Image (cartoon, rainbow, N blue to C red):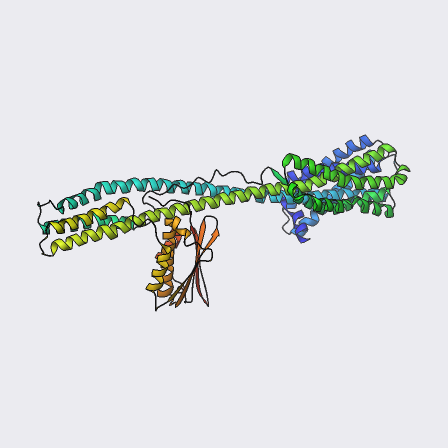
Length: 590
């Protein structure tokens, strides 16, 4: 009830669009009252009534500014009620003065007509105002989501551009720095090379390490943002329309109409004006039969025809409302004909039937229309949210692949290439004579390591082997438990980038739990949470990070590799939840 009162005090309840729609329903409703209660000059009465109705709604619109300056919403509601009541009372008095001079009109007639007009006005302002409020809220949400989509699309384009630029830079670096340096080394350590002494060759190798290889390692291990080529992200912004667009849910469209049926009590005042009180109450009861009729139709509607195309749904709903509304109106008129004939002729009865049917069907369609629009807007909002989610996943996936490519190249340079060069330098500096066989060994190890630069390191990380190695490494210090309820670990091998990301996050989280939290038990659970995401939950029995500690390398790692992550602590321990993008059929970056 308080929400209803607040809605009447809202700016939307007196907006131009709200007053315009309410005016249309007001004219229909008051025309029904006129057709039912007037006996003279009905056409003139309708024209004058419409003109006066436009005047009072214009007057209500002029009162918006002073009413809006009232701070207390209760005072504002009281003022709105006073304006509506006074405006409608003046309209009734003006009608009585201009059109009904020859009719005998008492206080009862004026009161019932005023009550009906006020009820229609307030009901329209509340219902249409609520619709306007929802429309504004929806537009705000859609605008925010659309802006977010644009930002994400720009970010994704930026990532793609950075991938291309990083690829060119990396190829240029290898071509201009690593290629010449390593080519010289390979030539000098070859089995047929005798140009330089072993010590000179060793110094050449060390200089290559210092000036070429290690700077490249530092560059690759630096801040993320550049790297080797990765698989292009799929364009998801042009996804097909939502499956529910262009359709209407019959079952749910009837439901809001059931809430409108009680509004027929609005007609009680003008029924009281034309009929005895008992007959008027019986008429309202008969007219309210629409509720059980609509309930029966809604319950018995075939499930396979619940979702229909817009055109067919409009036809089906219109026929349903005509039957559910028209039958009670027909019963009412049939039962009231003896009393109506005492005052009205057949033309009046037909006019009554027509206007009552139009008014109630219009109300039913208004309620359904509100729901249909809300459903359409909700589907649009859901689609925008899904598009944004897919773009975010695309960006996270691309960021993951950047890291994976950089990690592999760093591993090749830091591992095989650097190890081969260091080993060659140590052999050449050892003072032991280096014969052709040793030179062949040195040459082949450097060539093999250098060739790996085109492979990009380990192409298929093994999560099963990693879990065994991790448990063995911390054996005796901390018990490591792995859980795989969805049997995802074997499927992870199809996506090397995601597997490598999970391994890095698991390694970092277990290490932090033991080193910083003093954990003696850590549980790691891999599960399939959402489409395109695999979730790693790491739970320990440690104390977690100390209060006031600032995010470090681990937090940066989680932010780089996970689509979303969270760290929560309790008396029982700490839990890290990280959702990592994955594509089981996606190829590894080359």
